[in-house]
Length: 234
Ligand SMILES: *Cc1c(COP(=O)(O)O)cnc(C)c1O
Image (cartoon, rainbow, N blue to C red; front, top):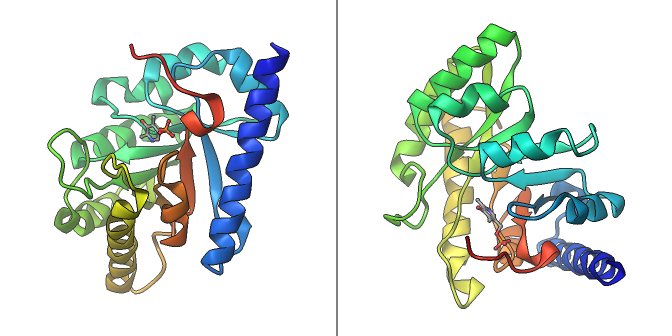
């Protein structure tokens, strides 16, 4: 257990140091990038270790897993829903999550609106973009993004804060630079069309490529393996 504790502590230090160096290379302030610890499949023990070392933002990709972990973790945690979200499960997590990264249809956004309206709350979301145009991935295409963002803007209880992507798996993270750059361009373009900096979150970059993502403008990076180690295949 002591070894596990040291493992997570050292991993976190390494990730944070890499984030700092990426910010320096990109002439950005470190506080403009938030680390989200992706804890899917990982036990509460590991998460509490990360919590002890200062992590407050945790990313999960399954509604059921958020629900089962929610009561076992401290109350000041910000839960990030980063996985595909089914409409019929929205009501289960709507008042528990800080940010939903994976809105990829108006139907989903509308369900979030209805559930948020019932509870008289506001829900922050990101629009997921399938930036690599992969059949295996969720998300809207680059050229559908503006339309979805502007439709969500008309919903009263949903605030669209930015964009998210899961870039293709690569051996060399440099291969994803073009996709991250494109995400930034889509976001800038939408803000230009809207006439103000409405979108200011860019959730992009994972263990394999978060450094490149930060250099290209990520404001949130989602790191799992790099903090908690490999996940068992389920
Ligand atoms: C699992 C997952 C991550 C983290 O992946 P790692 O490669 O382990 O860092 C990030 N984002 C999403 C959407 C994920 O599902």
